[in-house]
Length: 267
Image (cartoon, rainbow, N blue to C red; front, side):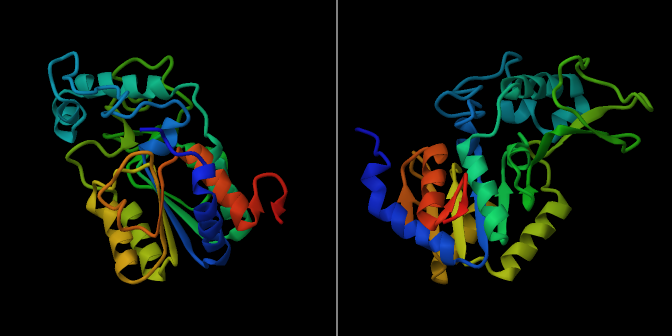
């Protein structure tokens, strides 16, 4: 089946763009599909790092990258954390990230909730970002609590030790089986309590309840919803606008249709 193009969605993009221009509070929910347009592989699925196979130590990636594994064998967990970071190294935000950041700069009340740990939203200029799964770029010592930012893991011994106390260092990310960070959860709860009047789901399979739940609630309460995803999700048939497009092409097109542009501000 031929993939649809921007031209195929021209009328829907114009209509969805008008929603961006009239909404007071906009919530973007983003997943791995957005960063895939920067060349980053997902963990699983077509083209994923661990697609349909065990890791090279014979474990599912969910077990190798679990909080339990990190506590018992940090060397194994770090082996795959380092692989994922290496796959991100050198990649940059794409046009989708920049479109969201530009919309926030011009509109104001734009919040991003992301499942991604690559830090691309902040790098693109977004400021109101909730990194629900943390970021690979922030390292934290589990013993003394010191935190530092890094551009990459190049030059780190794996697993690295804390330069201050010699303790175990970990990326400040949520591993499989771990709870979501309280601060991020509370920020997200405040955003939802304020009542977004437009929700845009980008590049996420909507598998987690906290991802799908706000979209479902918006649909039930008549709040407009937009989904951008080349594949089908459990919410695809329920949202107001569904674009089977790459985020890097759909988001700039929506921004243009709204009257905001990447280069000149609002037209």
